[in-house]
Length: 339
Image 1 (cartoon, helix red, strand yellow):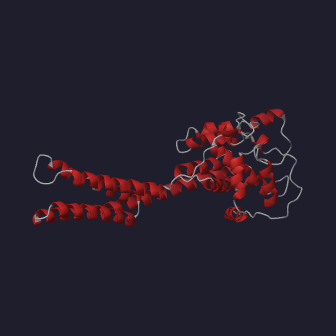
Image 2: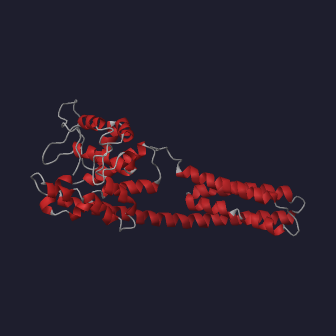
Image 3: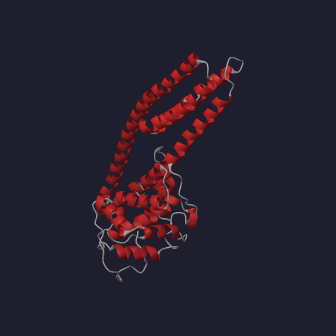
């Protein structure tokens, strides 16, 4: 299973700006100067310096844009004073062009900064709306209050440990974790809130909630990418899960991360039928489920994350993880999970 750490987006963008500057400089320096039939190519190459400057303004803060413009200006002026020696008027005219670089830098960086701020506000409002909606789903099952938010946080901790760093993928994982049980909207209260064990027919209906949830989010453009996680969040690594009995890497990566996060929260929070287990008890149970319920690589990542990280995440969402010496209170099945 490939989970290689991806290059940081900032480094990738900085590399693009640097390569664009070098490419434009090469073109500008190699096109002939002076009055001739190809002088128009030299003038076009000169204007191409706007490309790395605009990219830097769009991708970075004003400081990054200034840095990119400084590099472009030095390279541009080096060429001007190297190839136009003895032509003071032409040198002055070309040098004055650098002023337009800086004017564009400050104007573009200001405008892009405002756009980024506006988009950030929209994104924050969108995330708040999703969180509120996910929380409202838990009103039907009071004992799971905060469950989705904690599972989202735990899933993202695991993703970070495994080197998943790109924002779209992280947003997909977070939203999928928040809405993993959205399909329970279609489950009648008589089944969802039943305190006695479910009969075979009721259990079959309960087991349909992953597919109901997948069908629902698949109709929402901003949530469509979460469909695979939601449909597969009750699959097991050994193929004994539901609804499709997927095995191993057939299960989407997000669902494999979620499985550990979900079980960890289910075990370390109080339920109507049992008290919360300690961190050590959950740790041992998840370790025992490696290769059975859970992806071994995800379990390895979970086991490598210190208690303090999990505890801080739980505390931010109103839950305290309990620590005790290892006990024999782990269920014979080894793990717990939500239905």
